[in-house]
Image 1 (spheres, rainbow, N blue to C red):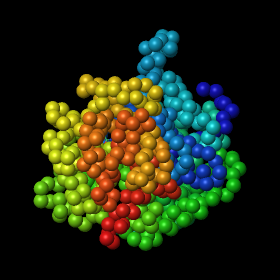
Image 2: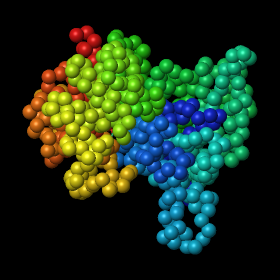
Image 3: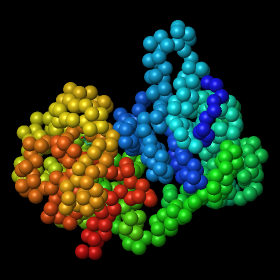
Image 4: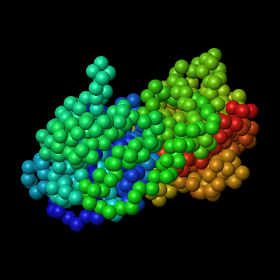
Length: 549
Ligand code: GLN
């Protein structure tokens, strides 16, 4: 790769000491600061694992699968990037080692390396560098986050590639930011810099000298500690930044700014910008910290004890709270714990019930009981994807009276497949007619990405969006079976959102209920702290009303 005249400057974010220090959030917050200075930003997450994409990975291990408008299944950090900035993510913004190697191997098979020996350096590293370049576009700043922790075997090709990258584009066009941990050891009464020193040593051993060190700690670092880190790690003293724990993630950009991070970045990258405009962030944080009311939402799910599996959902509910000046308490309820007799006990103290998306049959019974409880007791209910499908099944069984109604996902022999694999449908995103049946492979057959949906006036959905047409992101295989549509409508279900050709049922509601809505898409992926999603805003509002009524 030759040194090029690039418009974009690159910020590489690596992590050391241990995982879960919040590299994704730190990258997103850096993006927010750059945007607040009037720069345009984009992001890329480089994940060292061999899976080609995270679509088939277990949320237990990896957290939520985030879906972009273009239908890419990505790492959940892309959700942070979209929530903190106006950058929009897609297939170029997430690469795994698997995706890189896959493309190198395909090229080798096609003979593109002309019989040469294909090696990690330069072939894999070139592939990585090209992936990094491909994301830049017109952005002023591209923030490239390297997954994993420095020292992992898997991460080496990525680190080698970003080392070369700076050599290719020049010092003023690329900087390295390293996130480490500075623990406070109570028995010694001291902050310890040794883990940071070791981690930076590791990074320098592969040829990367960090320009800025972000130190995750529980308190602000005193100057003598910064001095020590500066000396031992060979960085400027004002490049040692405290990344203090915060109560609310939206405070991170403000903390970083107070520590001088954005100033240091633009100094190192030699760019001139206006002072950052952070008023909106300050107001947002003030609002979050001074709620006027509070509400409790019960989330009945399968991964209830692993909050990362519902990352975007969690955030979207918080955003709904912000829109209503209310604090939202989340009560995660394991669906399998709900059984005959325990519904009342587990759900009596919640003001609203939400059943999120999911796959497979485990926990279905419990979720359905929660839905029935919400419907009969007039508790605001929000069903997302699988949650909507189960709401339809529950209604068909208990209100329409078709006891055998089911989804073919859990019961392939059901007499009444109210949720099923649609044999043929027009795909508005690709413009093709899609076909599928039980034999279509796992992974590639989902309806993925942003699809248009027409809203019917006079419904809860229309009241929320106040628009005739919306675009929302999908990730599912099964659909509402139109053979039952008229019957359900006759019994009091409203179909308030449909695909433009009227074939795919996207939103259902109940009339005789304060707020009961299920949607086939995942609205949580498009909610932002500054622009709370209309459905979450209205759901929280209904839950607040339920409290007082
Ligand atoms: N398992 C259901 C389907 O594939 C729902 C998926 C989801 O909730 N994301 O249609």
